[in-house]
Amino acid sequence: MVMTRGDMPRGLTYYAKGGGASKKSKGSKICPEGKAWAKRTFDTYPSAYANLAASKYCKDPNYAKKAKGGKRKGR
Image (cartoon, rainbow, N blue to C red):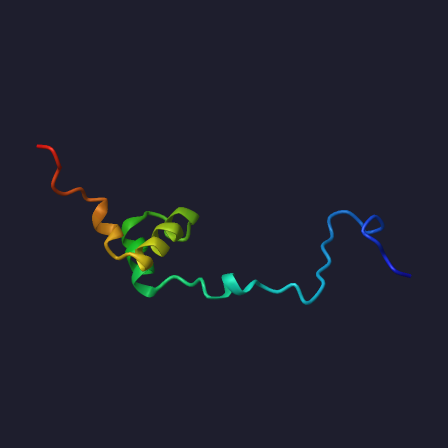
């Protein structure tokens, strides 16, 4: 018996070949420096917002310095 798309029960997902993680998501790990910075900066580290900021820190280490301000232009 061959199941067609209309015969499949709702809520189940069938993958054609394995259905593993995509190539893009396999290499998306946060660097240790970014994790340490996020733990120092945020009260609750294992959160989506802290992980987003940590990944931005890994891509651009000057990201943490932007939040502190600095010289104001125009004054």
